Image (cartoon, rainbow, N blue to C red; front, side, top):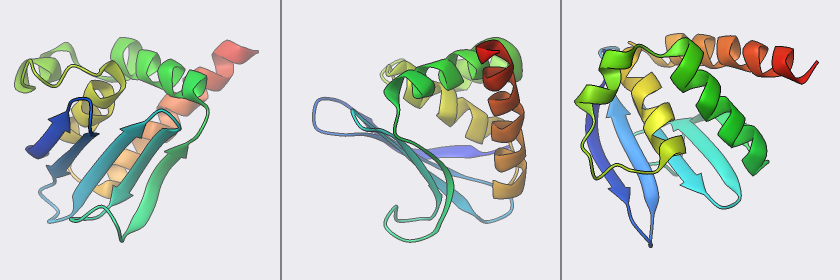
Length: 119
């Protein structure tokens, strides 16, 4: 399980950082231009785990994560002030996984559901 280390969800920024048991960290950044998730402690450097620049695809991914992939109990571990729905979904996913590899695998699973719905 991951652990939420830090987040900001306000008018100036929308991001979170989750540390995994594997000693890796996820930096999850949400903007009007899309979602960027890196395996990085500082957000600037690191491998990209997920990038999406179409905001509609981001919302669809968030919906699939919430309704198909994630357990209902993971939302209980998030502060109420982490309100952005897309940030909540990706942060919950990071908390439910143990490593960047597992995170990426679950993203791919959600992506298959998104693509299936488009057919």
